[in-house]
Amino acid sequence: MRPFTGLSLLCWLAAAASAPLDEILAGAGVEEAGLVAAVKAGAGGEGGARALGFKKKHLGLAMERGMWDLTTALVDVAAALKMNVESDLQMETSRVQRRLGALKAHLKKGQGRSQTAIVPTTKWAQSAEDVHVWVKFAHKLDTPAEVNSKAHPAAFTNGSLSFNASNPNKLFKLDLSLFAAIDPGASAGCTMGSAGTCTFVLRKAKVNATWPRLLKGRKKPRNQHHWHERQEQLRQSVDEGEAWVRDAPNRKRREREERERVEREQKEAIERHEKNQADDAAAAAAAAGGGGEGGGEGPDGGAAGQPPLTEKEKQEL
Image 1 (cartoon, helix red, strand yellow):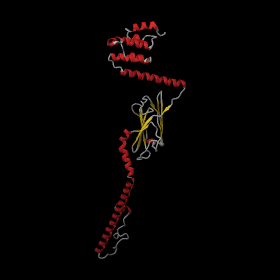
Image 2: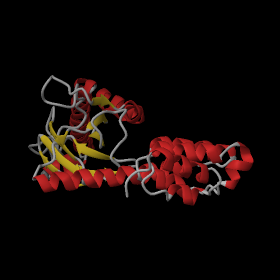
Image 3: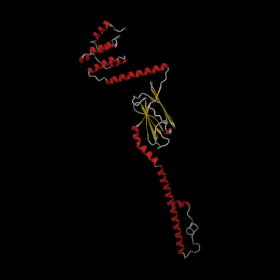
Image 4: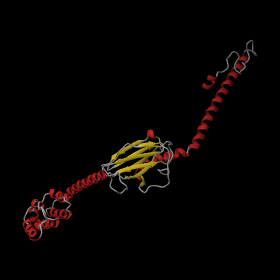
């Protein structure tokens, strides 16, 4: 049907001024400006706004048609009626965005175009044993995440992490060449968080070693950040690990001194035992009148007739 023009449009507007919204929005062939004029004409004051029979569904109808000026006029009607339509607008906006996204995906599929990979934004922190990597499905930290993205299994090597996630509209791909080696078998894959995020926990191959940066290369990506909140939680572990490394020379010295002390005490115990045996043998010889047949001392300094100490007996002393 052709749009109204001239006198026919004026006649329609005159009739629409007293018509309910259902009839106004059903005006076939009327351009958006005419619909807006009809709504404004019928919404004069609270009584007029109520007579229009406004319902929240009318917002959806206007947005579906892409009539944003009409949507604005309907929001004014809702305000005159003291109706809160903020959540309804948000819901309709999300629905329109989903339909647009599906349309874009269908267009790309029809044209045979592949998705361009996006490097997601990351944050990282570390403990003495692990490196924690947080991934957000967005190209910047302050950009809303793609909450409907599906995470795919990650691939670990001793020096890298590869991971991707996707939805009908976008593909996120992360490839990290790590600063130092990790233990792939002890590292945890993507743990999904809220609002389109996930976290990896990479086990360091060499524990108690602090990484100065996440990546092997010195150039840091613009969308890679330090994870300050998690680092504060892990600070105690890092401090203890660094203290353990710094104390390594003193720890080795204390271990050496302890071994030397044990060996010295064992030697002194053996010498005391042998001296006691010699003293007992001398006393026994003196009591026997200077030593009779079979008297005297054995070859190891023990009393005659007594076997020398075995190695096991020496260790027990």
